[in-house]
Image (cartoon, rainbow, N blue to C red):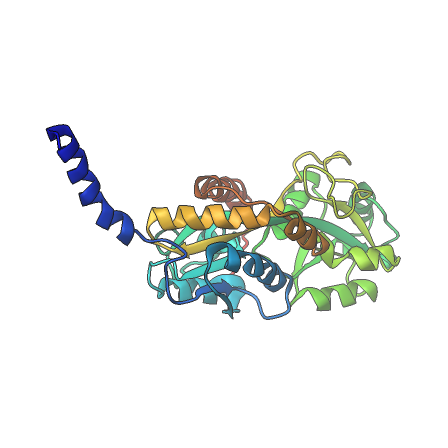
Length: 324
């Protein structure tokens, strides 16, 4: 054996134990626990279950879905803070838990930057503004003009003051000067009931919440907030098409692990999840839920979080939106 060969052999021998001991998502004996920030039966729960069913055979490891509902992510974020940084838990959540809560709350039970690490974007949903039939309006321009004539029509219900939809309504008020006001609801269903009953003039939420009622003629969707028309409802125009160029945005959801998790584990999860999200049957199933599957690298997801926070923090602060 030559000296060069011995040196190469020595390096390989030294590296072998490290390679064998390197963390890998398929080597863990315990199941992977996917933490959901909503109750069982919600859209995000269904998304996670679709992904989990495909992810488990891909990584050779069982996946268990756990519910940590409350505070639209506050409870789950606090729970994740107390999990080990070993890749045993992955949280699926709206990006508000990391990108928006730092400026919506005076204090948080977790540190979004230290306690949570972005893995990959999971999906996004178009938001929509909808009017009750009692308003007699069918477009966003019609609605703004109606509010100017009758400020009583300016109440816009929302099931979440801490999300893109509420920020967009706030921006609509600023850009048009119309007396548009957010009214907080405890959930999307009570809001939809009041819209159908003409008890509130308008409302905002993700597009899928309103589609059936819109198609049944019970409410009127005035437009969607994405830059392109939604694949879910290509016949509904965007706000930008209607002359409101600044009114665009979408609700992002993604996967996070405990801060301090090894970067190679994060990369492995990102690759596996992105592969699942790219599967045609997964994308089709998510589309029926009103969301578009995405995926991507941890770096890309981190950029999305940064961009969205930088865009919406000034809007929320100027409007005085606070959750606690």
